[in-house]
Amino acid sequence: MKISEQLCEKIEEQIATGALPPGSALDEATLVAQYGVSRTPVREALIQLAAEGLIEIRPRRGAVVTSIGPTRLMEMFEVMAELEAMCGRLAARRMSEVQRQTLLAAHRACEAARAQEDSDTYFYCNEAFHAAIYAGSQNQFLIEQTTQLQRRLRPYRRLQLRVRNRMGISLREHGNVVDAIIAGDADATEHALRNHVVVQGERFADLLASLNALTQTLQAA
Image 1 (spheres, one colour):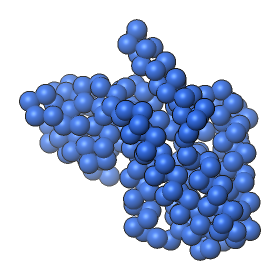
Image 2 (cartoon, rainbow, N blue to C red):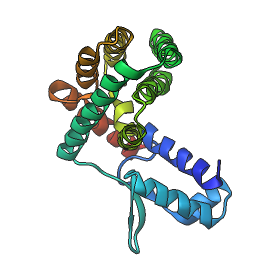
Image 3 (cartoon, rainbow, N blue to C red):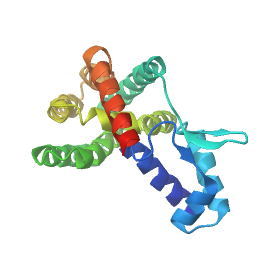
């Protein structure tokens, strides 16, 4: 992996964990000193993050972590739900036996993280679970588009898991998805994934409350 790609992943992780909340400035010189690299990979990493929509590069002002308004955020989750539902529908019809076993392994890992009440570990296991469904669709263009939006929503999907009881609910929803895929039921898989991913009503209010609480905590630090 190129240095710029490694750096991109590290910054993306900081954004996902909230260490770099929306509006945070990303200074090239600071990143060079922090990671001990030259300016070229730093610039390449920032360009990649901007392409993913995670940061904005502003003329004469440098790069800042993207701040997404509530309406835009809901719209993005609506599209994410439809993309994942499409992946699920195709996966129920096309998944190989090896891919089903990969999905089951990811589900078991989520169960273990839930048992430990470890939301951070659950987050990564959850990503592996959804990635297994994307792969099972066997539609490379769909995988690319879904993954791109998933990466942009990473910080917000992570925050969701910190809402009280959300891990347990998420795991039960995963179980419904797994059962539908193993049964080869495309309609049930599509329905289960759409309901699992879409963020509306109380869930959206909870997400915004978590985002506000995180922002206030970081500002007070």
